[in-house]
Figure 1 (cartoon, rainbow, N blue to C red):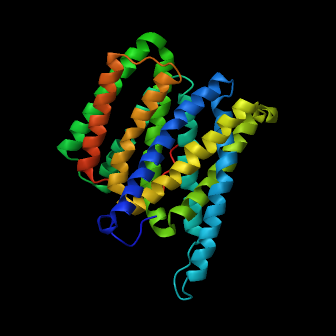
Figure 2 (spheres, rainbow, N blue to C red; figure 1 turned 90 degrees about the horizontal axis):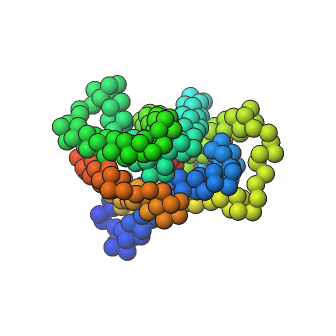
Figure 3 (cartoon, one colour; figure 1 turned 45 degrees about the horizontal axis):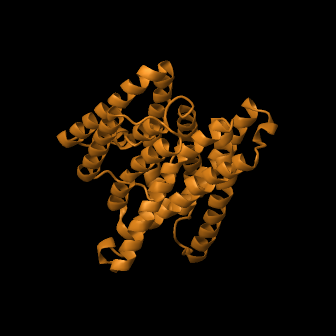
Amino acid sequence: MTTASSPSSLPANAQALGLVLALLGAAFFALKGIVIKLAMIDGIDAVTTLTWRMIVAVPIFVTVGVLGYRRRLRDHAADAPPVLDRTTLLQTLAVGLLGYYLASFLDFSALTYITAQLDRLILLTYPFFVVLFGAMFFSRKVTPVMVVSLLLSYVGIALIFWKDFSVAGDNVLLGSALVFGSSVVYAAYQILAKPLIDKLGAQLFTSIAMSAAGPAVIVHFLLTHPVGALAVDGHGLLLMLAIGTVSTVLPAYCISAGIGLIGPERTAIIGNISPVVTVSLAVGVLGEAFTLWHAAGTALVLIGVVLFGRKSRVKVPEADVEP
């Protein structure tokens, strides 16, 4: 959560800590696709991995949120509006289902069909949809710089898509459609989440949102899998613990703390290293191909996203657990 002090007024060591936390958060989030792919190699499918993610992460988020809620109740003035009313609770539960169940399911499923590199680059473009929805529903202005940024990024994605499609065919089409769907849903989640985060704070919002998504994912699993599918071996269990902690809980709190120390804009810009981390690990650990086409496409996406982030001034929520 943000602090009362302006990031620029903080001591140099605090700002340095904020940069480190933002970098770690981006890097930890970037590991998600790699861990999912490694789990698939071990025979653990996307829905099972997503279920384990919730089993591990939800209790942690809920515990932190409950503690924060109790602290807010202690400090709450008797004549002030309630910290949490029924309407806000229901809205937060619904937004949680959208962002942490539907968007996550689409993204995890996409990795069954496409590379971790392409998945990460497509998902990285969700801010474009945030602006598109803002223009459609809130009459927000779309500038020429935003249009150029969008074109650069999607030309880059098209280069990688074309190269991968020539090798893997229709799987790439299906996987790309799934992750584009995740990106659209996640953009809608961010727009809807912003006023709720402003009202409830990052910790309480995330706890309630995860409390809705966790059971939904488990019900989805039980409807499509036998309970015994949750049984995984030692290496698989390590991967499941990693997807819940290293790729979900740790980056969420690192980024939240980074925003508090250096501000949302700088944190968002630093977050653009995530595809570099994903690409590096996808090539080095998973053995995914990385040709000149992939290099050119990745460069165009990064240029477009960085240019967009510097010029668009899109508001960034203070709690950001990726789908």
